[in-house]
Image 1 (cartoon, rainbow, N blue to C red):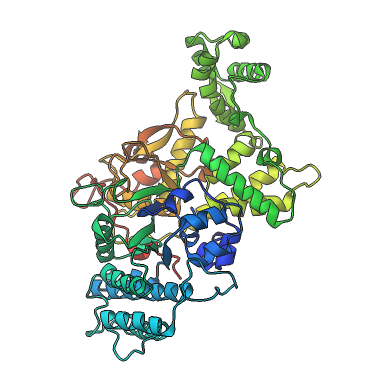
Image 2: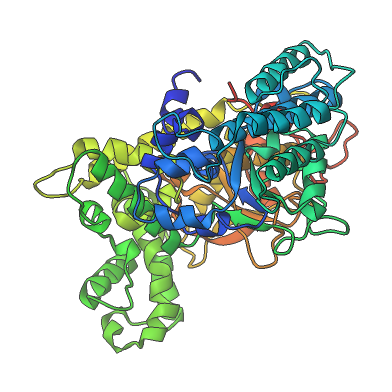
Length: 608
């Protein structure tokens, strides 16, 4: 684990200064919505950029940003931001009272940090202040006195620094399991205490309507009591506080969202999704990070398509050079009797490809062409006794055609900023400045190294061993990826499965592994217009593997969405899973995938 963390933590925004975060920031399509005045839930797996987005809303990082878009967005952000990162103290307390007290104390400390920032002449890097205020000593004393009284901070001098010192002492007592009896912290609603302090600050500065944004990072690590307070505030809190909350794709405490009495998506808050974005959004964001990667190395800008090259997988075969498409299809049909039969049943004459209309080719050839390129890279054919052919793994090295080039690289990296930065950093070590390109071999090497390291990281994710038939994330990834690999390298079918649905026969232990895999980014929810805004129940939901995992030897699958299969059927066909048994201690089938029992300390495996 110690060897794996440096690679994946190199670009972790939690460990970067405001200037470092701002310097490498590329504006995703969702940022303008996030920067608005609505409550927002930012939903995405580890490494998807949630922390970066929140930190870009904070004053110091915002003012360090030098992009051409920075000034317009700075003018749009008219609220003062309070950034509250997840902390091991409030994420792992043994009692609800101490957990709430730790969360509340950290939140109030962060408010004082922002108050100090706004009343400073410049920040720690010498940059001007976002939304500065001229605060006299008497005004600071007035605000501090009101906070001290409301927060129950005894024997504290009326200054911001002394308040933080008093909160530090409370942290020490909480860490020892000693909740101060005389303090409202932990006993009064946290949002009430924050709102009171904000009103005091605004009142003294004569800015009664000024808004503040509380930026809550990694909300899935918070105890249920905090979730309840936050959800209640989203539904009907005061107007002077905006909540911007980042969280994992799965949260077992958010089952009330959209239900009776709970906050309503699109009305009470805006959900912002960082995974499963459109190919156009992923390509635009990846191109932006490519530009920044070149700039950091003092290299002239070269389009990503020029550096990586194009592939047949990413092109529209209904247009362009039909001769090469015809020759390829003819060659595949001569080797694969199942594909030849598919053509025959549809009365498709490859030799007359030019006579087909665009719509005809789109409905047939365009649909199967990427699959054929994928199969051609991996399989050979063996003639059977009935003069038919059977696909077998090719003995020679696999072709890199489906796994490299601009379309494949952007698909494999899925718009995940951490993955993109790691992969580009490796690729640019072998950048040919004269040819302005990176060879296919070096592209693949960088991607497969990232995939293998990601797989190794999945193998050390925690598992609840107290559960009967416990299933790890790595085991579930292995089972699903091998199933999908067989779907695409076995007998030809034009519409193979490449996603799965959690059905009622999926055991809870497997759903637990899926929940952890979603958090890590190994699985991606396939959202539709009918999907719930926040995933809190897995039943009937559709998922796929991260495309990065589709590059590994003997577990390859196309980097594109395919039709779904029941997860229980995938498990049934797996020898690895079947050997564990699928019944409980009384011999009854294991089912009920309503929610996973993944604990917050399991999700926080890398909080330190």
